[in-house]
Length: 355
Image (cartoon, rainbow, N blue to C red; front, side):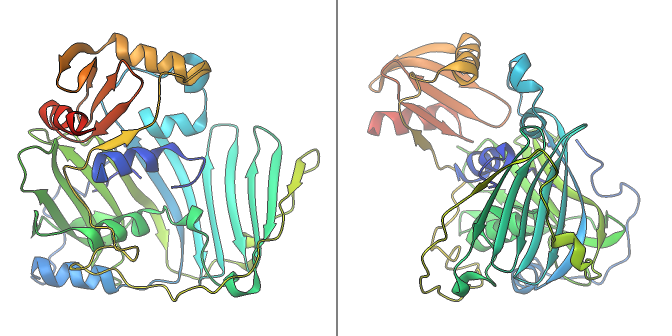
């Protein structure tokens, strides 16, 4: 089973952050009887997942998003990244310790990559024929860049580490993901204000690594957001995987070397103290956006398209347009402010009233 997954140029993570933190459909876990795995409590499964440490693996990930929002404009829809927001996409990932990672968004004819090898970090867009290169300070050479912390195992692990007392956890039906026997950890919000029915996270029964995640809207068995490994190997990837040479004709931008700074050791997330940053997950969080009325180009056109499908509302918050989907509610006020959350319209309006 799976959720969709913050690559700085990747859309699905932003959607997942709003949908699951206001904060894509693939075959879910095999629908047969499933493997006969030893019984385990939800708390033990959660603890195992949070403590898991898999430093070498490679695989492909399929994503699918069905948020129930209008289709993107033609030009934007042609983007491989936009497919991760409103359709199906494919990602390829590889990791060999903390100093070697590769993350790629694969399109039908294009590819976008982030390659981290020691102190070197490359970002590459084959469609734009552009690459950026930066050299990390020596103190950061073995620390994974935050842009790459978006694979299903990492996204699920951060979510699991941030859930609080407003979450009911249980163990679902075991199944198989990418050929791996997997338990399923089910998270359900206790608040009736949440539009999320559950988040389901398959967890490898041997390595305890999360293999994906899936978000189901309340009162629906059809996922709204998914991301899940479709192939996976725990063997160490070849060294060549993390070597990058810009293809001929690529415009290369050399970024300035970052100044060194002391890095705190990476903390393990905990069920009781939230993520390493201290942030605790909330099912009913509403995100306040800046002035969106000034959006231009494709963004402005799409915003107007969304608003045309919405409903005019007014109240103590002022007046604006309420936009509803399977998983998200957005309120765009006439003064340009916007409020978005995976919550009921009443919850969004209440947040807007508070400013």
